[in-house]
Image (cartoon, rainbow, N blue to C red; front, side, top):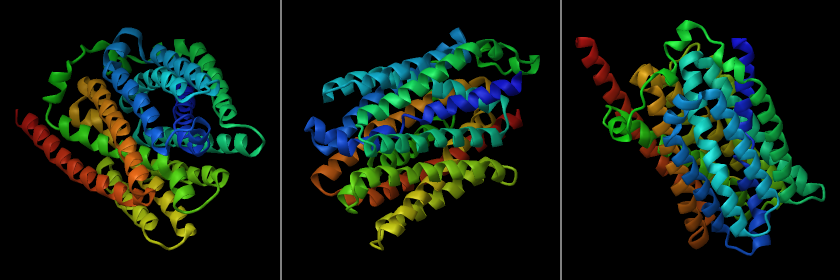
Length: 395
């Protein structure tokens, strides 16, 4: 039964990824229909991110009160309703309104599921589960591209994904009894049995501020690349909208392949080594995008940025119980998710302003600058948590 639950969690991670790349791939068509500047995609992204920040900060309390299974099922249902709302929207304001439940549904499920997996499953499963997120994120642009190239509109692309989310909600509802069928060893690590920590107490934990900034930077890189890759290819590289929507998925394909391979690499490399490897590959991909060597090299750069992003997110999450303790992991992962979505909230819109007022060609340089800060803060995190563990060991 525990393995059946793992299969359902895999499906849930596919669901998390499906809508994440839709806005970026559809936006070249959407902003023209609504007669708004190209930078307005950042506004929708910001509203979604604010919702995820709020719900991520509440994930510790929600999980303790309702359990991971119920939080996951309700969150996916909320996201499905929001996606259907997107599909029937006829103005930019309507999109902004539907972005609110979209964000609220995404935050809690992300934090709750990630902590559950970090506590109960091996590192390889964390990597492969996030690979399933990449499968969903890669399928999203293809679904949108299919809708755009077969006489449909971006609305139909959102509707197809909404239907898939509704099906998954039904599966999750039927699976609720499985979340309770765990061994006594599992229950000793159950976040539902722990007292919630206040935000002030969490921030005071050694290493908490560093991991928050690291997550901020990671999501800033991932979401900026995912949101603006299609527009970068259209406006700077001169590709058509439908081709760019399909090619932009190469970034998410890179993440997917990277996490599939990462599951095997975790048998040889620890979490810290996986994170550092990913950072080096992101730097190489951004340089490929920056150099004026043709569209083929740029597309290779998108894949490399995705490959580099692949191990960073799951490896930081999986190391959280070890670095901060199982009793604090749900609270820490909640603020990590919130910090990640602050990065999602602020940094893609900031690049939107840069693209609108300066040039979209600055995307690779923008990614490199954020990456430098990420590397610096991750190294500080390692030092802070190592000192804390050494201090605890001395007593």
